[in-house]
Image (tube, rainbow, N blue to C red; front, side, top):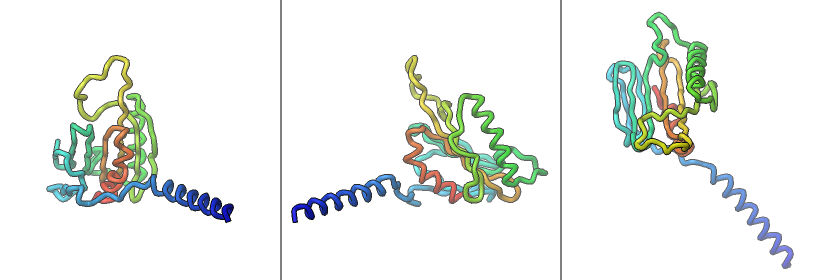
Length: 189
């Protein structure tokens, strides 16, 4: 009887251990109420932006929101690659342009973390850089390791032009905001 009790306790403990482990890595689904919707005045695109970010720049083809405190930028718009009016954009064109972006980032000491790869109806690229999106509030102490930033670029086609969303944030915040970034990508129109 005692042996069965011990075996039962061990079995229940193992089930709980694996169940807790399976759910511990899950992150909650983003709450749509945590976002605002930006619609291009020209009707060229629509994007969800995290609340609390400030409008930095708005122009005909795009918009940039940012948060100095979070060292984060979100940019979205059409004509990511400044394509000419006579250029028909398709996914192979976007992939080629993103490979050029990679060369530029690597030339500045960055590295590719993921991609370019097909994601949903477009192409996704995740790179690491040490260039902060905003000037640092304090200069790092001599010999200190510079913080890393993740740049996530998602590009697709819209009306034969490129449509993209780019996020730029500290490495430490990327994992916590990954689902929010995917939500913004999934709702880019």
